[in-house]
Length: 186
Image (cartoon, rainbow, N blue to C red):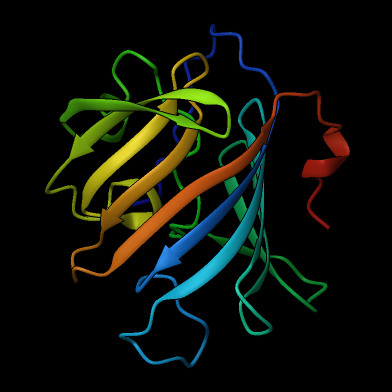
C-alpha cells in the first residue's frame, strides 16, 4: 500500500504553501538512539498542487529531503547525490485534506473536536482511532488539525500502533507562490 499523500479535489483552488514545523515524540528518533527516548525533528514542507518537498533535520544521522512529484516519491538523504524511489514513507504522508470531510480521503471516520489557532491560522481538529498506519505520519490514533480555509495539515497529536507518540506542530506558515524548481528531484 502506498501512503495516501492526500490532497484537495483537483477543482479546488489550492494555494502554494510553505510550513515550518517541529515533530517530537518517541516515534521521532535519531538513528541508533534508545527506542524509548523521545526525539525532535524540524521540517520545512513546501506544497504546490500535487507536488511536495519535505526537508527534515533530526540531527546528523537523520537529515535529508523527500520529494513527491505527482504520484512518485523519492528520498534524498543528506550527503547523497542519488535520490531513492520509495513507496512506504510516512514522513509528511498527509499534507492537505478536504476541509468538510478530511478523514474520508484517508479511509477513516473522525469526530470533530475543538478548533485551535496554529501559526496564526484557525484550525479545525478531528479525532481518529484504529487507523492502523493510515493516519498522518503512519499513526493509528490521535487528533489532527487542518487549516479551515485550505485543508493544509497544521498539527497532529497521535500514537502509532506501538503506542509511540508522534506530535507535529506548525510554527510558521506562508501562502506564497513557489517556483517549480523547488520540486525538481536532483
